[in-house]
Amino acid sequence: DIVMTQTPLSLSVTPGQPASISCKSSQSLLHSDGKTYLYWYLQKPGQPPQLLIYEVSNRFSGVPDRFSGSGSGTDFTLKISRVEAEDVGVYYCMQGIQLPLTFGGGTKVEIK
Amino acid sequence: EVQLVESGGGLVKPGGSLRLSCAASGFTFNKAWMSWVRQAPGKGLEWVGRIRSKSDIGTTDYAAPVKGRFTISRDDSKNTLYLQMDSLKTEDTAVYYCTSHWGPGLYWGQGILVTVSS
Image (cartoon, rainbow over all chains, first blue to last red; front, side):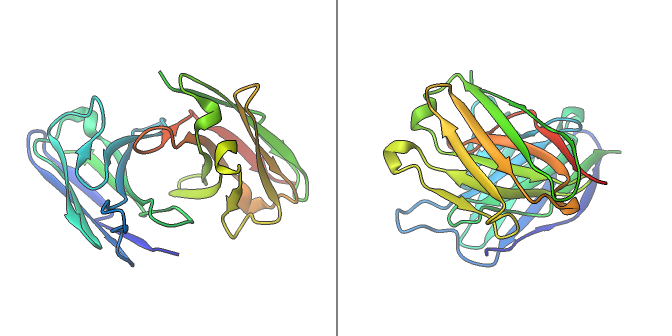
């Protein structure tokens, strides 16, 4: 199974400041079709996860442009340029290149 | 708008069975691959299993912890996904999410709680 490792476990951020979350996979997520199957989800308190970023760097419909994803191969990063109160929750990376689908352990973001 | 609504959760004793349902709307269900993902209380996300569309043979795949005990099926005439859970263990206690692979990522239902306890 592909192991997804996220750091840090938690972040406390002042509104308006940036935040960054790292995700590393135990195997490359680059498929032979040229796509890299790395996703970012946000689970707000009491809600199901919601898709933020797909294939490393593509923002899903309706996701604010303060969210950006980058990386390649096995190393990936989610950045929030200016954190807002509505961004609190747990962020998960997920790999979709191979079954079983696997998730990082999550990064909890809270507001200072 | 994609909607996924789970039902059928509840309290069951170890060794018992439960069947979850997921009513889908807002997309072409019979063409969608579907997965179940679970989340134990206070824990992270764990993929449970997936079913392909019938046009892709409709095969199923399962995570190791549930293989042989859980069965995913679908009724395309009812736009409904199922998760049959047998030989339940206390460690199966979790919120179970129905998800659709219809979009570029996963769409998620609100989730349904399954508690396995004596």
